[in-house]
Image (cartoon, rainbow, N blue to C red):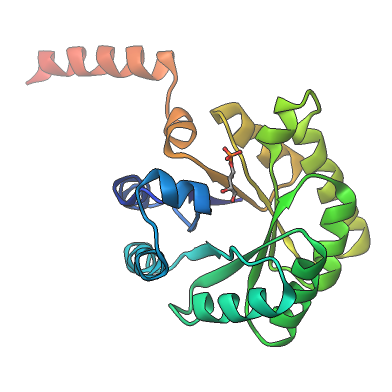
Length: 218
Ligand code: E4P
Protein backbone atom coordinates (compact mmCIF):
# COMPACT_ATOMS: atom_id res chain seq x y z
CA UNK A 1 0.00 0.00 0.00
CA UNK A 2 1.37 3.40 -1.00
CA UNK A 3 1.47 6.32 1.46
CA UNK A 4 0.53 9.82 0.29
CA UNK A 5 0.36 12.85 2.58
CA UNK A 6 -2.81 14.94 2.37
CA UNK A 7 -1.65 18.51 2.91
CA UNK A 8 -0.29 21.61 1.19
CA UNK A 9 1.95 22.41 4.19
CA UNK A 10 5.54 22.26 2.90
CA UNK A 11 7.10 21.62 6.33
CA UNK A 12 4.83 18.61 6.87
CA UNK A 13 5.50 17.33 3.34
CA UNK A 14 9.26 17.59 4.01
CA UNK A 15 8.92 15.81 7.37
CA UNK A 16 6.97 12.91 5.81
CA UNK A 17 9.37 12.75 2.86
CA UNK A 18 12.37 12.62 5.20
CA UNK A 19 10.86 9.54 6.85
CA UNK A 20 11.54 7.74 3.58
CA UNK A 21 8.11 6.16 3.24
CA UNK A 22 6.32 8.80 1.19
CA UNK A 23 4.96 7.88 -2.25
CA UNK A 24 3.10 11.07 -3.09
CA UNK A 25 1.02 14.06 -2.06
CA UNK A 26 -2.63 15.03 -2.41
CA UNK A 27 -3.97 18.54 -1.98
CA UNK A 28 -7.28 20.24 -2.57
CA UNK A 29 -8.43 23.88 -2.74
CA UNK A 30 -9.31 23.85 0.98
CA UNK A 31 -5.83 22.61 1.93
CA UNK A 32 -4.25 25.28 -0.31
CA UNK A 33 -6.38 27.98 1.35
CA UNK A 34 -5.38 26.66 4.79
CA UNK A 35 -1.71 27.48 4.09
CA UNK A 36 -2.58 30.85 2.54
CA UNK A 37 -2.00 29.96 -1.12
CA UNK A 38 -4.36 31.79 -3.46
CA UNK A 39 -4.30 33.04 -7.04
CA UNK A 40 -3.44 30.98 -10.11
CA UNK A 41 0.31 31.71 -10.25
CA UNK A 42 0.82 31.05 -6.53
CA UNK A 43 -1.08 27.75 -6.78
CA UNK A 44 0.92 26.57 -9.83
CA UNK A 45 4.21 27.54 -8.11
CA UNK A 46 3.19 25.73 -4.94
CA UNK A 47 2.55 22.52 -6.90
CA UNK A 48 5.96 22.91 -8.56
CA UNK A 49 7.65 23.26 -5.16
CA UNK A 50 5.86 20.14 -3.87
CA UNK A 51 7.05 18.19 -6.95
CA UNK A 52 10.61 19.30 -6.23
CA UNK A 53 10.41 18.15 -2.59
CA UNK A 54 8.89 14.72 -3.34
CA UNK A 55 11.00 13.89 -6.38
CA UNK A 56 9.65 10.43 -7.12
CA UNK A 57 6.05 10.77 -5.94
CA UNK A 58 2.72 11.37 -7.61
CA UNK A 59 1.37 14.83 -6.80
CA UNK A 60 -2.38 15.38 -7.18
CA UNK A 61 -3.32 18.87 -8.36
CA UNK A 62 -7.04 19.62 -8.31
CA UNK A 63 -9.00 21.47 -10.99
CA UNK A 64 -11.56 24.02 -9.85
CA UNK A 65 -13.43 24.02 -13.16
CA UNK A 66 -16.73 22.18 -13.56
CA UNK A 67 -17.41 22.16 -17.32
CA UNK A 68 -15.74 19.70 -19.72
CA UNK A 69 -13.92 22.36 -21.77
CA UNK A 70 -12.68 24.24 -18.71
CA UNK A 71 -11.57 21.05 -16.91
CA UNK A 72 -9.55 20.03 -19.98
CA UNK A 73 -7.92 23.46 -20.25
CA UNK A 74 -7.10 23.67 -16.54
CA UNK A 75 -6.01 20.02 -16.33
CA UNK A 76 -3.55 20.49 -19.21
CA UNK A 77 -2.04 23.52 -17.45
CA UNK A 78 -1.65 21.54 -14.25
CA UNK A 79 -0.18 18.51 -16.04
CA UNK A 80 2.38 20.78 -17.74
CA UNK A 81 3.87 21.80 -14.35
CA UNK A 82 5.78 18.52 -13.87
CA UNK A 83 5.64 14.90 -15.15
CA UNK A 84 4.63 13.71 -11.66
CA UNK A 85 1.43 15.77 -11.58
CA UNK A 86 -1.81 13.77 -11.46
CA UNK A 87 -4.86 15.86 -12.38
CA UNK A 88 -7.54 15.64 -9.70
CA UNK A 89 -11.03 15.83 -11.18
CA UNK A 90 -14.37 15.82 -9.29
CA UNK A 91 -16.91 13.00 -9.69
CA UNK A 92 -19.40 14.94 -11.80
CA UNK A 93 -20.72 14.23 -15.32
CA UNK A 94 -18.26 16.57 -17.06
CA UNK A 95 -15.53 15.27 -14.75
CA UNK A 96 -16.07 11.69 -15.94
CA UNK A 97 -15.97 12.87 -19.58
CA UNK A 98 -12.77 14.79 -18.84
CA UNK A 99 -11.15 11.77 -17.15
CA UNK A 100 -11.85 9.71 -20.29
CA UNK A 101 -10.30 12.48 -22.42
CA UNK A 102 -7.22 12.71 -20.19
CA UNK A 103 -6.86 8.89 -20.18
CA UNK A 104 -6.95 8.83 -23.99
CA UNK A 105 -4.35 11.62 -24.10
CA UNK A 106 -1.82 10.20 -21.65
CA UNK A 107 -2.63 12.46 -18.68
CA UNK A 108 -3.01 10.68 -15.35
CA UNK A 109 -6.02 11.47 -13.17
CA UNK A 110 -7.35 11.16 -9.62
CA UNK A 111 -11.15 11.12 -9.48
CA UNK A 112 -12.05 12.86 -6.23
CA UNK A 113 -15.18 13.12 -4.06
CA UNK A 114 -16.13 9.44 -4.39
CA UNK A 115 -18.80 8.39 -1.90
CA UNK A 116 -20.37 5.29 -3.49
CA UNK A 117 -19.47 2.08 -5.31
CA UNK A 118 -21.42 3.29 -8.35
CA UNK A 119 -19.23 6.38 -8.62
CA UNK A 120 -16.13 4.19 -8.24
CA UNK A 121 -17.32 1.98 -11.14
CA UNK A 122 -17.88 5.01 -13.42
CA UNK A 123 -14.46 6.48 -12.58
CA UNK A 124 -12.77 3.15 -13.34
CA UNK A 125 -14.67 2.83 -16.64
CA UNK A 126 -13.39 6.30 -17.60
CA UNK A 127 -9.84 5.10 -16.89
CA UNK A 128 -8.97 7.12 -13.77
CA UNK A 129 -5.46 6.35 -12.52
CA UNK A 130 -6.63 6.83 -8.92
CA UNK A 131 -10.09 7.08 -7.39
CA UNK A 132 -10.51 8.79 -4.02
CA UNK A 133 -13.26 7.53 -1.70
CA UNK A 134 -13.52 9.94 1.29
CA UNK A 135 -13.86 7.47 4.12
CA UNK A 136 -13.73 9.95 7.03
CA UNK A 137 -16.57 12.00 5.58
CA UNK A 138 -18.59 8.77 5.09
CA UNK A 139 -17.98 7.91 8.77
CA UNK A 140 -19.17 11.41 9.72
CA UNK A 141 -22.61 10.60 8.27
CA UNK A 142 -23.01 7.40 10.30
CA UNK A 143 -22.06 5.02 7.46
CA UNK A 144 -18.88 2.92 7.48
CA UNK A 145 -16.17 4.39 5.24
CA UNK A 146 -13.93 1.31 5.51
CA UNK A 147 -16.85 -0.86 4.29
CA UNK A 148 -16.99 1.37 1.18
CA UNK A 149 -13.26 0.82 0.54
CA UNK A 150 -13.72 -2.96 0.92
CA UNK A 151 -16.76 -2.96 -1.40
CA UNK A 152 -14.89 -1.03 -4.11
CA UNK A 153 -11.81 -3.29 -3.74
CA UNK A 154 -14.03 -6.37 -4.17
CA UNK A 155 -15.75 -4.95 -7.28
CA UNK A 156 -12.44 -3.89 -8.86
CA UNK A 157 -10.97 -7.38 -8.24
CA UNK A 158 -14.03 -9.12 -9.75
CA UNK A 159 -14.17 -6.79 -12.76
CA UNK A 160 -10.43 -6.40 -13.27
CA UNK A 161 -10.61 -2.59 -13.11
CA UNK A 162 -7.16 -1.01 -13.12
CA UNK A 163 -7.81 2.25 -11.19
CA UNK A 164 -5.97 2.40 -7.87
CA UNK A 165 -8.10 2.88 -4.76
CA UNK A 166 -6.73 5.94 -2.96
CA UNK A 167 -8.43 6.01 0.46
CA UNK A 168 -8.84 9.69 1.39
CA UNK A 169 -10.24 11.73 4.26
CA UNK A 170 -8.24 9.65 6.75
CA UNK A 171 -8.81 10.85 10.32
CA UNK A 172 -6.72 8.51 12.50
CA UNK A 173 -4.06 5.78 12.50
CA UNK A 174 -6.64 2.98 12.76
CA UNK A 175 -8.18 4.19 9.48
CA UNK A 176 -4.81 3.50 7.80
CA UNK A 177 -4.60 -0.05 9.20
CA UNK A 178 -8.24 -0.77 8.27
CA UNK A 179 -7.62 0.53 4.73
CA UNK A 180 -4.67 -1.85 4.37
CA UNK A 181 -6.96 -4.74 5.44
CA UNK A 182 -9.78 -3.58 3.16
CA UNK A 183 -7.59 -3.62 0.04
CA UNK A 184 -6.81 0.07 -0.55
CA UNK A 185 -3.86 0.53 -2.93
CA UNK A 186 -2.99 3.91 -1.43
CA UNK A 187 -3.90 5.97 1.63
CA UNK A 188 -3.64 9.72 1.75
CA UNK A 189 -3.45 11.05 5.27
CA UNK A 190 -2.51 14.12 7.27
CA UNK A 191 0.87 13.76 9.01
CA UNK A 192 -0.43 12.95 12.52
CA UNK A 193 -2.19 9.63 11.71
CA UNK A 194 0.95 8.50 9.83
CA UNK A 195 3.20 9.35 12.80
CA UNK A 196 0.64 7.69 15.10
CA UNK A 197 1.53 4.34 13.50
CA UNK A 198 4.95 4.61 15.17
CA UNK A 199 3.56 4.65 18.67
CA UNK A 200 3.21 1.81 21.17
CA UNK A 201 3.69 2.17 24.95
CA UNK A 202 5.61 -1.12 25.11
CA UNK A 203 8.07 0.19 22.50
CA UNK A 204 8.62 3.30 24.59
CA UNK A 205 9.03 1.47 27.92
CA UNK A 206 11.12 -1.28 26.27
CA UNK A 207 13.49 1.26 24.72
CA UNK A 208 13.79 3.16 28.02
CA UNK A 209 14.82 -0.09 29.76
CA UNK A 210 17.33 -1.02 27.03
CA UNK A 211 18.92 2.43 27.20
CA UNK A 212 19.08 2.28 31.00
CA UNK A 213 20.71 -1.18 30.93
CA UNK A 214 23.13 -0.08 28.19
CA UNK A 215 24.60 2.48 30.61
CA UNK A 216 25.82 -0.45 32.76
CA UNK A 217 28.20 -1.49 29.97
CA UNK A 218 29.39 2.03 29.12
C1 E4P B 1 -8.42 13.90 -0.72
O1 E4P B 1 -7.65 13.94 -1.64
C2 E4P B 1 -8.85 15.06 0.06
O2 E4P B 1 -7.86 16.06 -0.06
C3 E4P B 1 -8.95 14.81 1.55
O3 E4P B 1 -8.55 13.51 1.91
C4 E4P B 1 -10.23 15.27 2.16
O4 E4P B 1 -10.16 15.02 3.54
P1 E4P B 1 -11.09 15.77 4.60
O5 E4P B 1 -12.40 15.06 4.66
O6 E4P B 1 -10.35 15.62 5.91
O7 E4P B 1 -11.23 17.19 4.15
